[in-house]
Amino acid sequence: MPIILQTERLCLRQFTEADAPIIYHLNTQPGVLQYVPEPLLTSEEHAKEVIINIILPQYKNNLGRWAVHLKGNDEFIGWCGLKLLNNEIDLGYRFLPSAWGKGYATEAAKAALQYGHQQLQLKKIIAHAHVDNIASQKVLEKIGMQFVGEGIDEGVPVKGYASFGNML
Ligand SMILES: CC(C)(COP(=O)(O)OP(=O)(O)OC[C@H]1O[C@@H](n2cnc3c(N)ncnc32)[C@H](O)[C@@H]1OP(=O)(O)O)[C@@H](O)C(=O)NCCC(=O)NCCS
Image (tube, rainbow, N blue to C red; front, side):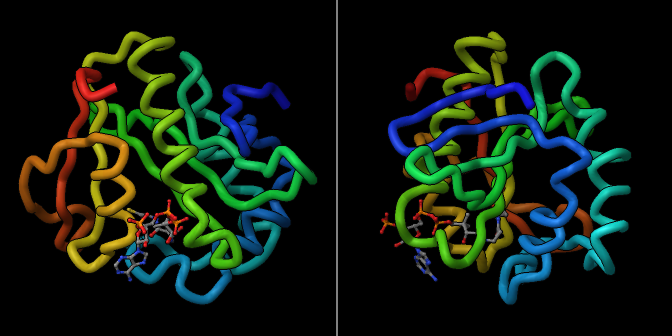
């Protein structure tokens, strides 16, 4: 499982099929999908299908959603990363509630944004957050992404953000 990035407190690595139990656990925690228009996972087998059909194919060109672990004890706390979505590169993240409010999302997202601009030479990276998802909007603003307007994404009202690499 190749490591993509390390930060002061976190290690970001590629997922493998063996991660089905932790993906299932993450997606079924109360509140995690509150602002995310995504079907609920029904089983670990379902999570494995998502890994095979959705997550692993993103790993071309060093993109993708990466598992985030604490460096100290290797505990899995969520994921963060860059996904090719409708011809744009989208920054996204999702963490276990037990890991919220400690700055981990900001730390991981900032590193993913820097990696995208500096290592992958991406000129533009976008992100969306549900209009009511204040925590996510704060993360995007703290890492220097610019608010570009409101819209509808997969049927839900969102705030759109973009980064051109000049805030890093
Ligand atoms: C969004 C999410 C990643 C934020 O994770 P986190 O670890 O709490 O983020 P951070 O600690 O780095 O920063 C969150 C910021 O939002 C603030 N915040 C959190 N909840 C808030 C709320 N309900 N209202 C206002 N601010 C809030 C925090 O105080 C913090 O800001 P601060 O550093 O200025 O104090 C996390 O809630 C999550 O995984 N949610 C479920 C999945 C999700 O919604 N993903 C994003 C889809 S766009």
